[in-house]
Length: 286
Image (cartoon, rainbow, N blue to C red; front, side, top):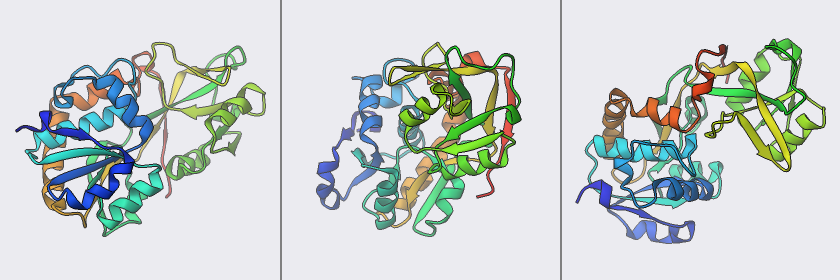
C-alpha cells in the first residue's frame, strides 16, 4: 500500500507506543502545525497536494507536506506516523534518543551541527537566500518611503539564534529582544521600536493581526538569510539510513518538479507581492 493511504496521525500521548511500532517512521510536529496541517490537507492524500493555499497554510505546514511528498518520491514505502512534540527542544531530544526519525519542519544547518553525530541533516529544503522575512511596523506609523536599516530600531526573538545572529550583524539602529510574539507586536505599536521581523503571511494582505494591533510590512524591502535549512534526521533510530536515503532522493525530485517553489509561494512565505522587492542579504556567524 502506498504512502499516500498509510499516513496516521498520533497525539503526543501516544508516544509510549513508539517502541512497539517497529515498522513505523515517526515524524514530530508541533500541535499547532498538526492542527493547521489537518485544516489544509483535509481528506486529501498529502502526496497529492499541489495547491498549498487555504485555511491553515503556512511555511511550516508546507514543509510537513513536502517532507511526506519527498519520502514518497524517494521510494519510502513503510508506515509513517505524525506525532506531536511540545517544543523544538523536545523534538531534538527525542531525535537524539532515537525515539523518532524526523522533524516535520526544518532547522538551520548551524543549529544541527551541535547534535552530531546523533542527528543528521537532510539535503537542504531551503537553500541560501530562500529564507525570507519582512520588516513590519504598526499600521499608520510606518516611516515614509523605503527605509535603510540604520534608520530602524527593531525587536526580534533572541531564541532563534541563527536569525538573531544575522540581525545583530546587520546595520539596524538598535536591536531589542523578546521571545513573545504579542510582546513584540505591542512594542512596535507602543512606539518602543520601529519594527519587528516576521515571515510574510499567507493572506493576500501583508499584515499581521495580534492582540488588537495590526502590523504592516514595510514595502519594497525584505530580508534574505544566506544560510540553509534542513530536516533533522535521527541517526540512531531504527532504519534511519533508509529514511535518509529516501528523503534525500525525494527532495531532489520534488525540487525538479517545482513543488518547493510552489509551496513557498502558495504559503505566503515567498509572497507574490514581494517579488522584485529589494533584498537585504544577511548571514549568521553562528
